[in-house]
Figure (spheres, rainbow over the protein chains, first blue to last red):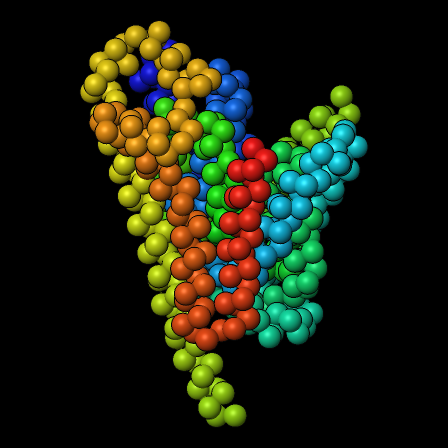
Length: 278
Length: 139
């Protein structure tokens, strides 16, 4: 394979990863890492370095549009970043202490259960009434976004903000231990615990994953894991895909987003169970 | 009561511009880094015509140890006008964009006199710096 062919193939795959990531609130690492290592025979360290770049590119590329359109709930994002960043630091300390196959099994089961719970909400009406949350009231976490499909603004209430914060903390710590992207867990906490509309959950997760990844990006660079020749087409492709995805999301039915999200969720759950049980 | 409501609506108005500001920072960071990455890639391909046709040329670019690790190394590469140096600068700019976004948020919430969120974003920023330092020490 010539360097030109490598660059072109990586660009195309990364575009797809950015598109998917922007729609469902993930970083695209689940596509970029296997594509680079299995298909293009790139060293795993460079593949992981490139996936950190991909997460930040998806986040910044899509969030530029989502923030302007109020699809991202900025206040919820920054409130929850408290937990994800402190969780990530705790995870770094836990790395030597906790571990092992059981963690993958427990987590795989939890994700599979969440996938089924997500399917149950497939036909649910969004923006309905939720339990009163005084902290969410005080921090003014509630929001509204314009839905082009409905033709009007949809306002929503946030609930269980403390529960969401706790799950984000655990998610931040575990995602480092398990080596999985934290985007999926962020979407789950906002969608299933805090009861944000799904599109707001994916857009807000998108906004947050860039910060989580940026915290570790400097380390990957200092280790020499970010190879410019590998990361360049990944960054360019993912940015293009994320911008395209951010144009698409307002026009896609929440139901469709939920189906795509659930498929990805169950796929990752299956992978974790296989890793834990094998 | 009335003045409290006025204050709240003024806060709401400012939040609109907060969103525009954050969106602008993200867009500028992303556009500038994309330009550097594309330009750097083009320079590399122009300097090395073999990249277009020689399958042997890929290995040296992607073998372990090929990536720069320090800003000093990047600076030397830039001085030599290497395409990969421009790409690296673009990547570093991309990595710095979310951190700039958090720093900007502190300023925005301070301006809005939103004490709770000024403290929250400042704490997030401190933890980002902390995890960066811990990682640098451990990694």
